Image 1 (cartoon, rainbow, N blue to C red):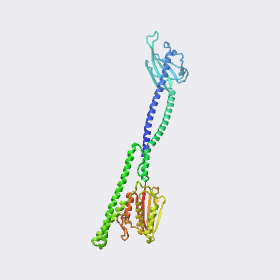
Image 2 (image 1 turned 180 degrees about the vertical axis):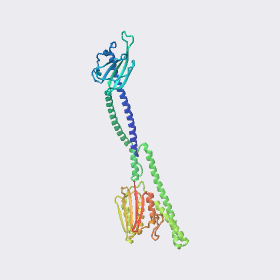
Image 3 (image 1 turned 60 degrees about the vertical axis):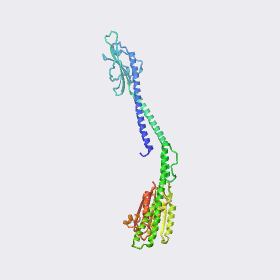
Length: 450
């Protein structure tokens, strides 16, 4: 998950689920223990009631208890039962509520010890059984008699109570979880808003709407925004110094080369050493001119907004029509109104100018310049076509090399296409494609802004 907000929400949700799950299990366990304790307390009360109502001196165990004040023990099938067992003789007294019911056997209670068990009735129903053992010394008896008193209660009430509690517990916990997640989501949205604002400002810088981050941010982000501003200033200054130094160097070399070339032009004869030196000076001059154009390339600037290219393209085409008016070339221009260029205007003029001028030099009668948006609307697409003789297939890659020329009789230095290719691919990260047939040549430039 790439979203920081999503990661925090996912982690918090897992922690919340584990916490509420553990809390729910613990509360459920505590409630069940409390409910069992309540059942045991009720059963103890019934055992004490049996002890108080029993006549342990009676010879017949079944006649020890006449009636009980608890109506639940006198109502058949009430779910509450009582039993008194003479351990020695095995005779048993049962409450009237157990009429027609075969109660499961419960272990004989130890003297003075309470023993609570969960048993299953004859129909599979759950029963709680509490046993308690006593010793009774009757008159005229040599040894005390031992009795086990047992109280039973149907577990359906306990199960229903636990089920209601669980429904209520998990219902409230579910609602609480949703509420906490919503509150947490809102808190995260508010807490992470400064990060989004920083991202918006950086995007605005990329589009050239502002030059640095200007918002006030929390202490955790202030160091980041301050360092970003320093980096932007340093990058601008460094780029400007680099361009100035390279441009100064190219101009400094170009001037003495021009003087030397003029001298050689005056004195050099074909085939002489001076002619060879003149050729080398021409090569050096082309190299200097090439790097001078590179130095002038600004590239895609973080401070440059996207601007409409129509006026610039139309102005260039109008200039070419004047330059090549003597050849009566049909130079057509087609520019989408939505076409934008996010870079230096000089770079665009260099790209379009080189391609269009090269097409005019080789065209027979027609040159077409078109600028459109990409399919997704996030690209700049330039297409320049001519109806010239075309470029042999084996020469397409060669012609893109610096200083390469197919025809020395055509004016030029042979660096235009190389400059365009390097500027498009290396500076703007775009794609430059040159296609050619016997019917003409097409140059296509595609630059994406995303």
